[in-house]
Structure formats: structure tokens, C-alpha cells
Length: 144
Image (tube, rainbow, N blue to C red; front, side):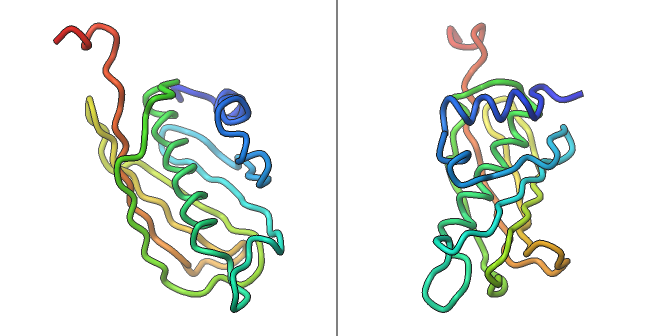
């Protein structure tokens, strides 16, 4: 059972992060176990050399791990990225990207996740991301 559904997550993005809709990010799956998103190809996502730009891949991974966090903890809009590390493994061709994210650890104040990025239809990973999110305290925890 997810703490936030795919439809609720998409509504949250429309309200608070409309850039995701502008980029065309599609929710493929959002469960407590994993979050999968698709970034359709657009020529303006390319960098010199004909590959998808690093900032596009980082943003997609951050969005996917954020989705995984909210699927586990519910609608905590102030869950924020505190660190993100990306390893670019190979040059993705100009095509749609798929990201699969999952949580590695979920604590009371921090969540750690990872994301794997792939060119659509290719099982070879193009980038690997780890990220940590700070979780806001629950209402009852603020007095402590």
C-alpha cells in the first residue's frame, strides 16, 4: 500500500513543480517498492555531442527518488534533497530515458535512495544516482 498514489503525486507536481509536466515526465509506476518514470525525448534536452544533458538526467533521478520517498512516507512536501551524487556511466543516445528508483533506507528524519537511468529499450544503465532527503518532523515531534 503506497502512502501517496501516482495520481496524488502527479497532482502535487502540477501544483508545486510544474516543470515536470512541462518536460513531459510520465509516471510509469509508483509503489512502496519502486518508482519508475519516463522522460520523453526532446531535441532541446541534448548537449553538444548529441547526448542527453547531465542536468536533465539529474533532475529526472531527483524526481524519481522524491516519488519513492513520498510513496513511503506520504504527502510531506517539505521532504527535500540534502545530497545527490550521480555517476555517468555511458553516453545516452538522443531518445527517451527511463528511471527506476527505490529507497535504500528510511529513517525518521532521513531517507536514502538510489536511481538507475536507462535509454528506453536498452537494459544497459547510463547513470546511477544516490540521494539523501531530509524529512520534516511529524507534528507531534516538533516540540521535542
